[in-house]
Image (cartoon, rainbow, N blue to C red; front, side, top):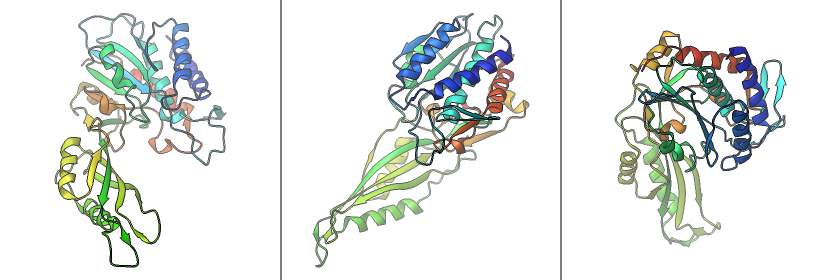
Length: 354
C-alpha cells in the first residue's frame, strides 16, 4: 500500500477519534468506531471488551511474533483548555485535541505501519496490531487482559509519545497508602499523641533514604509524597494522618522488595495498591535496538510508566509526539510528526530479523 495514502488516512482517522470521547473505562464508542473502520479496510478484527487487534494477512505459524500496541483511552480534559478538547482543530501543521499526543498519534502511526506490511508475503516475522483500553488507569481490562488471546509474542513496540526516540527501559510504579496512627486529645492540654508529627518523621525518612543501587538508564529509586490528609477540627490532636507515596523503581529492585524495605524504614502502616507495574525493558544488544541506533535514533530510560510494564516480554516504547504535552491543556500533535512516525516505523521494521 502506498505510504502517502496510509499517511493521509491515518491523520483523518486521528481527527475522527478525537471527536469521540474515550475516557478510561469509557472507550466503547471509540472502539466501536475503530472496529468498523478496520473492517471497512478489509481487515479481520478481533475484539475483547474495548480492546481490538488484527494480524497480518500472511501469518506463518512458527515465525517470531511482533506486537504493536498503543491505547485509545484518555485522561479527562483538565482546566485551561481554550480549544474544544473533542474537536480536532488543525492550524497549519498542528492538530489540537484531547488524546492527540497521548496516545492517538501512536495508535494511528503504528496502525499505518501495520497496514503497510499487512499484505507482505516475505516478512521474517508475524505482526499483530492491538489498540487497547484503560492504559491511563492501569486498568484490569486493558492490554494485559488480552495477552493470552494474542498468543505467543516475542517482541513488542509500545506506542507512547517519545519523539520517536527508543525507550529501552522504563521505571516501575508502586502507589503506597500510608497511615501514621496516634491518639486523640485536646490541643490546649498536653494530651494525645499527634499522628501528624509521626507522619512528618516518616516522610523525612522517605525523603532522605537512598536505595543503594542506581541504574545507568533509569537512575535511582524515587519516592515522592504526593497527598496528605489529617485532622477534622482545630482543637483536637489528630489520631490519624494518611498520606500517599508515589514510588518509581529501577530494574535492580522489584516492587515487592521496595515495599518491604519501606515497611522496615518507617512506623506508619503501609498498604500497596498493586505490585503489577514493575520496571521493564530490553537488551541494548537486541536487533531491533541496534537497527534503531544504526538509523540515528536515540535510546534512553523512561521515568514514566506505560503498558510496557504489563507486557512480559522484550519491548521498547516509541512513538510520535512529546511526553511533555501529555495531560496538558490544548494537547496537540504535529501532522508532520505522524508522517515521520509512520515512515520511521516502516524503516525500522523493513528487513528486520530477530
